Length: 173
Image (cartoon, rainbow, N blue to C red):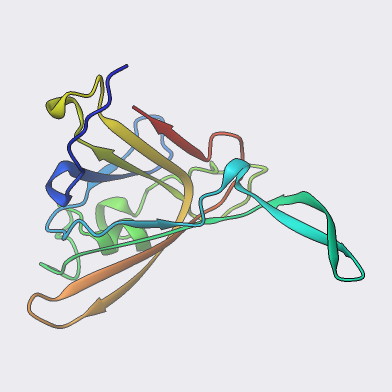
C-alpha cells in the first residue's frame, strides 16, 4: 500500500455530516477555512489510572472509553437555510430540511434519545501517490454552534463523539 509523501493542506480535505436514516441526509461543509481539530485520540480510546505504592507507580490500568472532541469553523453566509438548502444551523439544530433528521442512535434505541450525527473527514491522498484517500469517521457526534460577526462572519462548530459502540471511530486509507 503506497503512502503519499506530500503533506495534507486545507484544500485537500472535505467534511461531510450525515444523519442516521437508511438513506441518510448529507451536508458537505462549504466556505470553510480547513481548520478541523480532533483531540483526545488514544489507543482503544481508553483512559488509564495509575496506582502508586507510597508515591511509587506500580501499575497502570485501562479504565473507561473516553469521548473524542472536535471543532471546525466555516464562514457564515447565512444564519438559516431557505427550506430547500441547508446551512450548518439546520444540521446541528434539526431545522428546515434537517427537521426530520434521524439520530445515529435510531428512534427507539438502547443507545439513548440524543440527536447524534456522523462526521466524515476525507483527505485527498490518491492524487499524491497514495493507494487511497484517507478517511476519518466519527460516529455518534453531538454538535454545538457559536456564531460571530466579523470579516467574514463565522460559525464555530464544536462537537463530541461518544464511544457508544466499537465503530464510533474509524481511520481508513
